[in-house]
Amino acid sequence: MNVGRTICWVALMPAGVLLAAAPPKQEVVDPNAPVSYWKQIRPIFQASCQGCHQPAKDKGGYVMTDFNRLLVGGESGHAAVVAGQPAKSSLIDSITAKAGEAEMPKDKPPLPAAEVALISRWIAEGATDDTPKNAVQRIDGEHPPVYQRSPVITSLDFSPDGAVLAVAGFHEVLLHHADGSGLIARLIGLSERIESLRFSPDGKKLAVAGGLPARMGEVQIWDVEKRALLLSVPVGFDTVYGVSWSPDGKLVAFGCPDNNVRAISATTGEQVLKQGSHNDWVLGTIFSQDGSHIISVGRDMSTKLTEVETERFIDNISSITPGALRGGIQAVARRPGRDEVLIGGADGVPAIYQVFRKTKRRIGDNANLLRKFPPMEGRIFAVDYSDDGKLIAAASSFNGRGAVSIFSGEFDSTIPEMLLKAYSDKIASAYSAEEKAAIATFTTAEVKLIAAIKFNGGIYALAFSPDGQSIAASGEDGRVRLIRASDGALTKEFVPVPVNGVRVSMTEPAAGRLP
Image 1 (cartoon, rainbow, N blue to C red):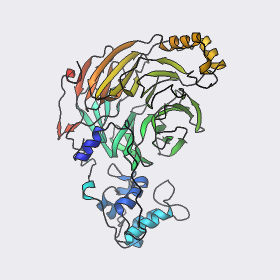
Image 2: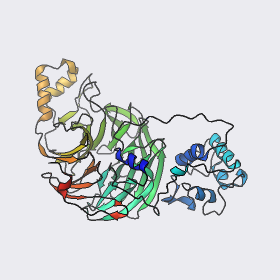
Image 3: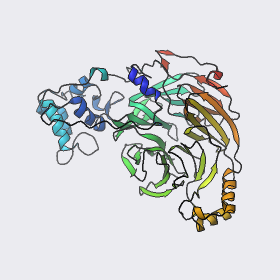
Image 4: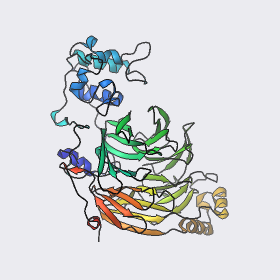
């Protein structure tokens, strides 16, 4: 995807869809050995400092992602790091707590005393830069990514006015004209991997979830019009996923590989919710219609409901009974105007659930299920609703092949009284043959496949245009396709990144379609 074989190889792995690599081995650090900038100091700066001190957001004129600029300091004119002299290094003064508070990190708890002592010792030992030569890679607004081939694309989203299509790249989000006619801007930040992106409800901001694999998660908030990074919020020690906005645009939710759902203030970056009822990575989030709850899905085969105000786990929306689902759930979308969610995952079956149950939870029940659709080949990695709720779409991948299926989203979601009674009175294993047949009839009624489009290469991202006329889809081969929603016809296809510095022109849509 970018210069260098290692990066190209990483780019071929669909972000957030493969099993995680084994965690890095913990090295035993000799307490008498010199402090390593690369192994010991840099991770502290990544987790606590670089969100506010990077090229895209150089608070106080201070950049900590470039070693030389880290030493020099910012607008104050004082050297941040004076090799061999911690007492003359303004960085130490800024991060040292006085009366329980420190100048940096701003509006956050001070760094632990042990970390401050480690940084001070590193400076006293000469502030040596032991960054491996093959690890040096400068990517920022002045040094944008250079592509040898188009990257795997993990996320797409249309702006609410339908004018802009945001596309995930390497270290960046690319803003395109929605009709595929040209590149508008490149939003380049710290995260190598962009796992998820979403426009705010008013279209003025863009939330981005991703990070540095096995090192740091990050949520970015961009001002779309000004192309300016408003917030960079470090989260944990691995990439984060499934970003979503509250309906009022005040909160941003996302999923984490530490099994937690989190939400932050979109203005300050302050964490306002952390909920850990999942038993595996959380890969997708969406807010309820009124913003009072978050629906999350993950690798633990579950769809969970969390109350925002109390940060309390409320319910398992989908069944968690062994055998009810096969594999994790990758994607979730809410029907506009209703508290119903569309999910998709490893079993390849798109399914719609009501968010708030109307019956008492029983062992083995799947009482919130409203509709399930014909299975797609392979795993589902993305789902979406048209803005009027009349259409749904799902994207899948299997053994180098991909597909987009479009279904009608119109149906009567009223659960029959007979089924409500069965769900309330019996455990699932006690349903009669008549009740089981009624469930099967109800959950497949009015299900209509409009189109199924197959591709060479897995499809990992899709989004409906606001007018519902078009679907953008992309994935393994890095090409963006625009699909007519009414019949599945491909109308445009283009490469969204400059390859070898030259923008690739649009090609005929048939090139990406299987016979």
